[in-house]
Image (tube, rainbow, N blue to C red; front, side, top):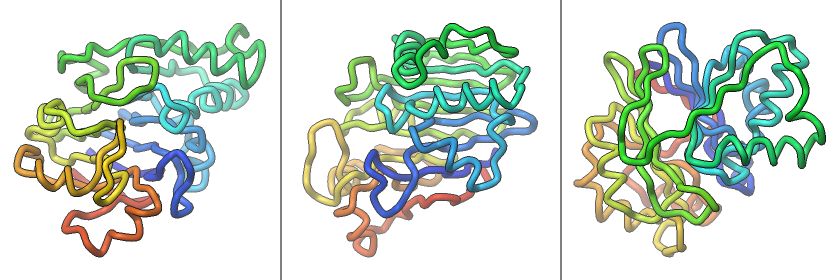
Amino acid sequence: MRVRFVGSGDAFGSGGRFQTCVSVTSGERALLVDCGATSLTALKSQAVDPQSVDAVVISHLHGDHFGGLPFLVLDGQFSRRTKPLHVFGPAGTGERLTQAMEALFPGSSRVTRRFEVEVRELPADGSPSDFHGLTIRAWQVVHECGAPPLAVRVEDEESAFAYSGDTEWTPALAEAARGASLFAVESYTYDRPIRSHLDYRTLRAHLDELRADRIVLTHMSPSMLARLADTDLPAAYDGMTVEL
């Protein structure tokens, strides 16, 4: 499994980073974990072909995590994509995607395409969903976004990549991280608690509960980026690639 942080930033482009978008490839299978509004630009700037993406796994329905889906769909349409695009996300993902497409490009959700966009809702209790031999799991976390927010995990025969999504500390993170080859976890601030988000000091206090082989920080605000020298965990950056 190869994990590439196409976008490692927060909603506001802090540090000049693209919004959350993580490419996960295993054999011939290619997924994105989250697809923030800047993701199509990020993919093309890093020579990752959007048409190679088989599926997108969405952690929650905020624009910096799913707002790139309308652009990905339209790019597929105008690039004459034919293979299906599978979208996995929390309850309400299909409806919210239709709303977003209509808000950004009126009529775009109703046109006839050469490819199918199939939306599947993920159970939020860790139950497995299969995608061509990959296993996708999700756990509900704590983040106000109008739909159940999720920590998500993608597993192949040998490795597992897990991602916290945006959340306060919750024991669900320990469930998502357990046994993962790599766990990418939000560290929005260094030591200032913010509702619905995780700060580094709180994360560090629970580090023993996160039984993953490797942990990397992501989704960082300017104040957190300014304190990276004070951490003992590595931080993701746009283009960072990890072989699992």
